Amino acid sequence: MIARVLTPLVSGTLFGAGLALGGMTDPARVRGFLDMFGDWDPTLAFVMGGAVLVMVVAWRLVPRMAAPLFDRSFAIPDRRDLTPSLLGGSALFGVGWGIAGLCPGPGVAALAIYPPAAIVFIAAMLVGMLVVRLFEGRGK
Figure 1 (tube, helix red, strand yellow):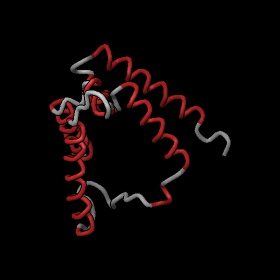
Figure 2: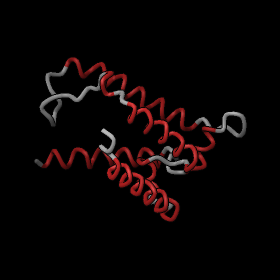
Figure 3: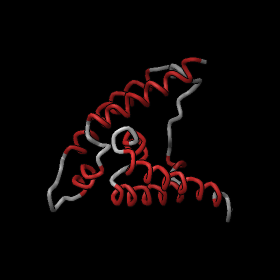
């Protein structure tokens, strides 16, 4: 029981610390990465590259494991998970990320570094999540 709470807490703290150390809680840095024809900042590419390397190792290890350490089975996505809602939400996420310069992980981590800007972002994110919940399932 403790591992089910402690593992995500430690993982999230480590993730947030990595984002803060990598400068990803600074919206200007993210916008700088997206400004390919201006004052381009490659920092985000290195952060993403590090994440990809970790996942390459993880995807090689998963088939060799009988089960995850803290669950009964692995939740591995397949093509059936690619729904119109997922694709539309991903596009909306990307547009919002480009405009705000923050996404949920760095937004939460930014609460400790840039509280005024982060609070506005987190509030808008929570309102968006609430709107999705209210309209989810309508039209099915």
